[in-house]
Image 1 (tube, one colour):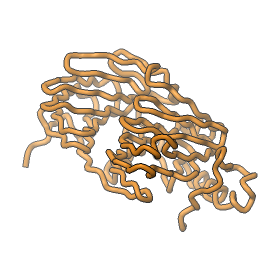
Image 2 (tube, one colour; image 1 turned 135 degrees about the horizontal axis):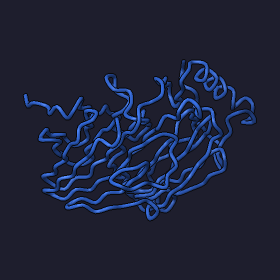
Image 3 (cartoon, one colour; image 1 turned 90 degrees about the vertical axis):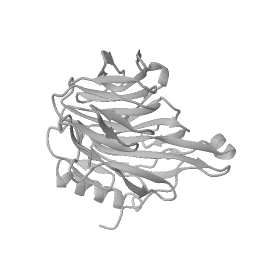
Image 4 (cartoon, one colour; image 1 turned 180 degrees about the horizontal axis):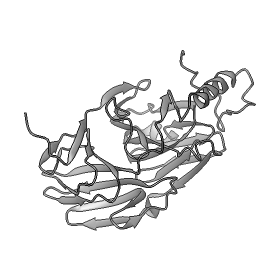
Length: 300
């Protein structure tokens, strides 16, 4: 058995999850590590190839207490939500949806891609909101790829998706100190990751890398030891996601699509969503534009 560097606290292998005909690799939450900075959920979607006429249809469903962050490498989704947003997201863009006290959204393959056949590949993550704003009004912001800061280092291309890193600051507004970067590494590249942020993780998307000499296999996440500067090395071309930030201000409870700091908030969200159809969507939760179906509350 190879020795793990002291720079790494934990390596997480994903669990496969079927989201109704579309499988993802779920990394967070993990039994031994529930969060990294504000990130409480991390799904790797695809890569998946869809034949003409097929696509993804994530029916309307609710969220509270978090911000969803969709980031694509390939493909596209049309986002619709209950505050009226309708937005197509393409590779390199950021859709940042703040659920706050409650929002409903859907994600579907655009009609042109569905007709032609296409591939989908990307990351879906959730960021827990600080307790002071977890019950805020919902909002949605789209950031095109061209608006996100980029940098080049020897053998590495970097895009700062959210927060601050490598001397750059993303225009994406976050509610706590955040680290979220896409790094594309050439074969032989070395990239130093400093201890600027207290909690950090590295996810190898499509090819193994080394962290201070320890191999991180593709589709696995390494939790970096606090206070350590580390060096990422790619023997072959690799795409890497770097994430983290300041620790959560309190433990979070997660149930289905809800994130909250208390059972009371979870119970209210469950009751509101269960009652929404019988109230003809006139209560707290409403359907997005042009949507007339939904995902029911799971059996309690």
